[in-house]
Length: 389
Ligand SMILES: CC(C)(COP(=O)(O)OP(=O)(O)OC[C@H]1O[C@@H](n2cnc3c(N)ncnc32)[C@H](O)[C@@H]1OP(=O)(O)O)[C@@H](O)C(=O)NCCC(=O)NCCS
Image 1 (cartoon, protein in one colour):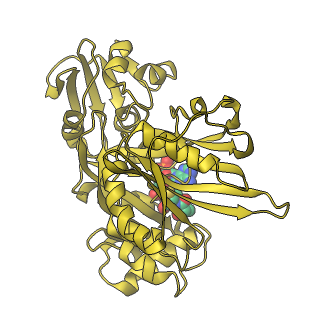
Image 2 (cartoon, helix red, strand yellow; image 1 turned 60 degrees about the vertical axis):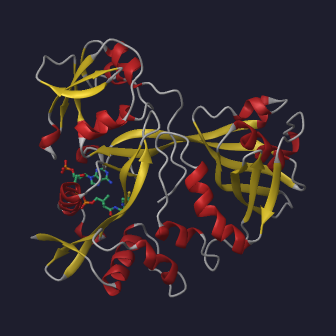
Image 3 (spheres, helix red, strand yellow; image 1 turned 30 degrees about the vertical axis):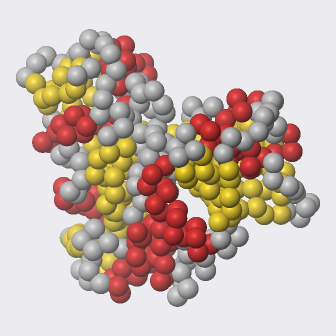
């Protein structure tokens, strides 16, 4: 029988990491990688499935915070390192891990990145945010005008000290953005394994530092230079524009690749909007509402007549029930529902990436008054999560 245990020591964490990496077809962590990986194991949050004494499955979560529509920041669990040993798959090991994790998470919401689109809906996670992968033709990318602020390059030690603080100030501007925990930074700033050729520049405007970008440039065999933007955050439009002026005026660079929100207006910066090419759109945020009453109360709503939404949640039945959603907020009610929705699809509409009417058109939900529900749940900006975990 599968037993779920909370892991407690470094040897178990390393076995957990090895099992997860093998499930992803990667090799085990090397001695060089391990010191930067260890801080990503937070006591009490690392679960493993055992068959007898053998570890056969893994998951863990990181405690952080997430921005919801309207700008409130709520406690959030970033779920990661989900894996089942290849000789134990399709026997319910992941299901046992998910059940245990969801029933013990202290946070009202969890998100994860899914390796495949068919795994997590059954556990109540819905596809709540997508991301665009952009390629910019840097040689033709002309932004008219001059910068308004100043961009300065940081040496690595200064960057290590400044970035965590600056990200906390400027990196939480969209629904779906999450705060970063110490173990995240330990890996991101580990120059031995990952950050060797990374450059960090910071923008300052009239009120001080208000944006940054981390990038890496590599050269291919045809002597073309490609820039990969690894991290980008800014607090205002001037910082955003000035950082892009800096990036697109760098010598030698032929192409720039970056992730961006679906509604990022980047192409409007350039004389020729076609220099920005969307290579792909990926699903990014899979969101699980763990505590529905608390999460519905945490966000704001647009203006429309109230709608009663009935939520169905097989794994966490405390969420089952009807909620009246209006421009003034959301509360649990005893009333006839307008719309009935399973918990994964409530997760899909929560950040504003998906509309009720799209789910109704696809025959995924039933009811009426979808236009009102769309207007209530719509947000002014698309969600994004720039923190990979
Ligand atoms: C994905 C993974 C964790 C699933 O673990 P598992 O123990 O086989 O899952 P379970 O046996 O609990 O399956 C639960 C259900 O999900 C389905 N399912 C599981 N993995 C699936 C997949 N990759 N695609 C489609 N369905 C899947 C099962 O068929 C089962 O369906 P059922 O309830 O209708 O019978 C495991 O296959 C794995 O480690 N894969 C490689 C690593 C990976 O992708 N990790 C996820 C990182 S986000």
